[in-house]
Image 1 (cartoon, helix red, strand yellow):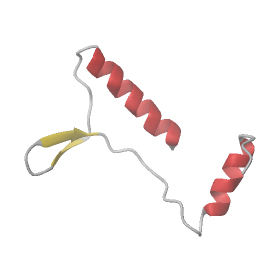
Image 2 (tube, rainbow, N blue to C red):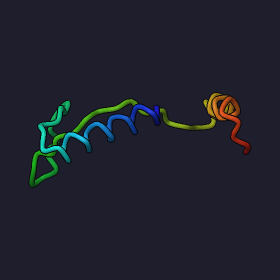
Image 3 (spheres, helix red, strand yellow):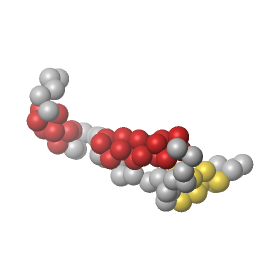
Image 4 (cartoon, rainbow, N blue to C red):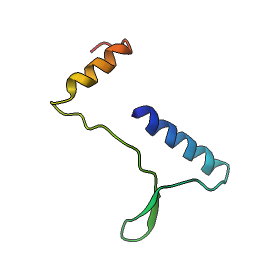
Length: 64
């Protein structure tokens, strides 16, 4: 999931830097403006799935 968030941010930044229109999912009203947003999935880390996260980090040879 961090890869997807990073990739989405990178593609958006490149599009903005080139002056191109960028694709967004929806606009969220913050009270003053409607802000274009891209919705990306995230994984909440809690005591129930911490083992899953630890297993993924071990595959990347990262020491705790």
